[in-house]
Image (cartoon, rainbow, N blue to C red; front, top):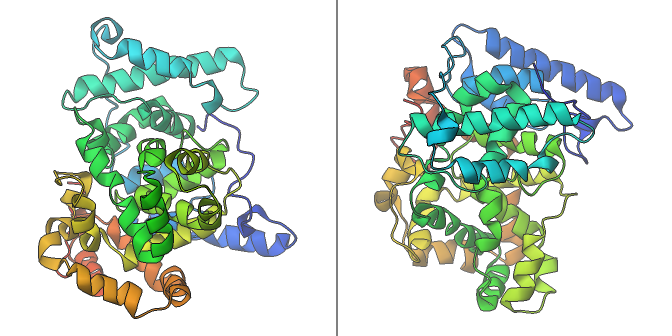
Amino acid sequence: MALRCEQGDGPTCSPWDGGTQKTDFNTKRKKKVAEIYQALNSDPTDVAALRRMAISEGGLLTDEIRQKVWPKLLNVNTSDPSPAPGKDLRQVSKDYQQVLLDVRRSLRRFPPGMPDEQREGLQEELIDIILLILERNPQLHYYQGYHDIVVTFLLVVGEKLATSLVEKLSTHHLRDFMDSTMDNTKHILNYLMPIIDQVNPELHDFMQSAEVGTIFALSWLITWFGHVLSDFKHVVRLYDFFLACHPLMPIYFAAVIVLYREQEVLDCDCDMASVHHLLSQIPQDLPYETLISRAGDLFVQFPPSELTREAAAQQQAERTAASTFKDFELASAQQRPDMVLRQRFRGLLRPEARTKDVLTKPRTNRFVKLAVMGLTVALGAAALAVVKSALEWAPKFQLQLFP
């Protein structure tokens, strides 16, 4: 049962909000709901279709649907018993005091108008979920911002299911953020500038000259934007997208936000303080569906395997969540020389032509490719055949994210 009142099902500036063509909106919505339930009721469940639904415009539409689909995207069996808490975790956990402080500061993450008693009860559940996951997985280290992700799952699916889903997420998508050091997190952040460079070298060079770095995007990445977006419907829309895609998709989404704000950045004084201040204040009225579409396009055109060398130039690459994907593991074999990349994306295309090419790839192929990014080997030979035919840039692509 959803723990929040939905004020809408999709981002602003989207036809999923209705607008003037209410009849068309309702028709599209009903059609998508029917397709989602058809995929859920298939035997076996059509996870590939669910991923396409989560990626495509409007995402999964409602929390009721998310309660059914998110477990499928994470390969969590909802019939399994929920993890049982250990004894006196609050007394023995080394992280309890920090978790308590963070949760107490999370008031704005709860729906406006929620009664204090209900909110305080949810905050207690939030603490219990975090401590239980850490106790069951001693290799994981708590970080500030983790609670922003956990509270999103708590509000959408409730305490029991949130525990199972976040535990799976923590040992896969979020694994790098939960190391004892920030090394792997920094490595993921290092993908940001190479992505921007491929699309807009002028913007990249300006940011490099300003020495702004990538720390402005840290809270975006480690909270999946939950900490920086004020409207919960935008947060869950992004979670639909991220759960259906490759673990590095949040850094691609961060890149498209920066690219979208190109003119604002270039109008800044070219110094670290000015550019950092601008970028750290994320706008709340972003065209989310457009940016989601562009992030998917960039991932398909510039997969991690083609950016690995540039990302690792600032820091030696260690094992990341993406390393469980074959394209990342085989990055060295598939890496194209830097000279070829620069000729292809800078010399042969005018800037305006390059941007148009990158951001307007055909939608159908992109949805197929993005959907198979998250397929598991549990889907069998048919899924691998789809992967082989769809991902031209990654031969022998095998997905092992969810064992």
